Length: 119
Image 1 (tube, rainbow, N blue to C red):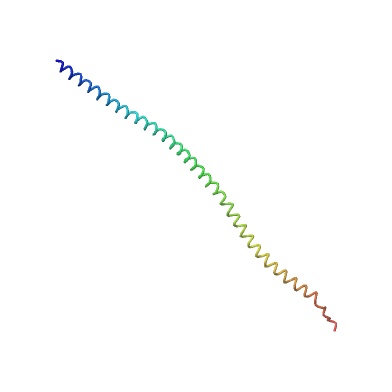
Image 2 (cartoon, rainbow, N blue to C red):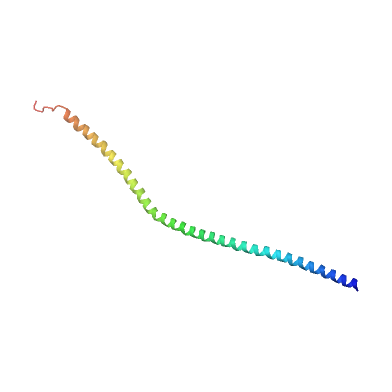
């Protein structure tokens, strides 16, 4: 009977050791899963922050587009004014040439001796 008690005790020790080993493995796995969960939560928080930033950037870009659209009207007006100034400069150039020509004619008339029409 001593052999049976010794075998029973050895088997009992074996099952206890296997049970402890399985519990340790399960605890290690559980610890890994808890760590992964914490990491996932942290990454989710960061991505949520990125989403908020991206959303804010989208709103900012839309505001810039809206503002630049209102500037288009002024840019068109400036372009029209610039074209009018260019046309005006061309007219002034023609008038300047005409005035120069008239000045030359007037000077030439004053430089010529008067012709006598009494003879």
